[in-house]
Amino acid sequence: MDFSSKKAVRNQLAGEGLRPKKGLGQNFLTDESVLSDIVSAAELDADSCVLEIGPGMGVLTRELAKTAGKVVAVEIDTTILPVLSKNLAEFDNVSVINQDILKVDLDALFTEHFGDRPVKVIANLPYYITTPIIMKLLEHSRIASIVVMIQREVARRLSAKAGSKDFGAITLAVDYRAVAEPVRDVPPEAFMPAPKVWSSVIRLVRREAPPVTVLNEKHFFDLIKGAFSQRRKTFVNSVGSYPALNTNKEEVKAILETLNISETVRGEALDIEAYANISNEMVKGM
Ligand code: SAM
Image (cartoon, rainbow, N blue to C red; front, side, top):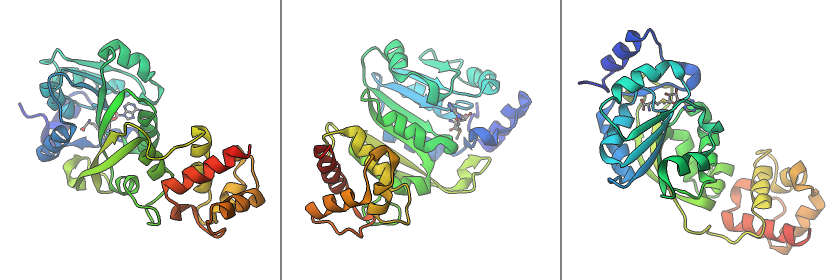
């Protein structure tokens, strides 16, 4: 049976009286080559425990269920569940959970379904919440790798180098926890309906240890947020007025001077090591 052509997607939705919900980022994948590239990037075997976010009608879920040991798929849209369960009827290794991924207690979910085994996350993400989802996933040390389809522009930011225009707070936050590897770019025509922008599949592999030593992680992440909170301003001006850091411009200038960093530097010109050094120096003085 055909599950992934544009016609199949249209017919299945129509059969339930449904239309793709823009507000939930419903762009369904209709390109077999992309499906197989996602599955191979995830390097699955019969022992793999997979969390899929947003299974939709289950095109990707079906491919995951064929190779992985167990798949848990979290879908927010209740109306799509009848189509999803029809399309997954032949698999006994998939559990569908009707919830908002941002509200799910991942620790509890992993323990219930996967015991204490490592977890791989695989998803064609809803683009309106790409960043919060990735940030939430990176907080969980049980997640060993993440293969996701996201907007191409965001994918470029995740693997950007310091000093480039794509470099930002998310680049540093991801770099601290994981190594980002591009898998492939995907044109709008690979989806039904077609999104306005190109997409990319990327793979994030959790680092065993962060690439820098940080004395206080909360402060380090607040410093990053502060530095990029006002992009047009210098590092000193943005950080010096960022409330969570409870500091001021003079203090920030003095710390940059101690570390031999120019006081006119901008946040996007500093690499992860510089952020760690600045944060550690600020924490020492607290
Ligand atoms: N996996 C399907 C595919 O590849 O064709 C659908 C992908 S579609 C880009 C994103 C899916 O995420 C939709 O099914 C949407 O309903 C679901 N979704 C949106 N927001 C969500 C949330 N907060 N939690 C869980 N699922 C969500």
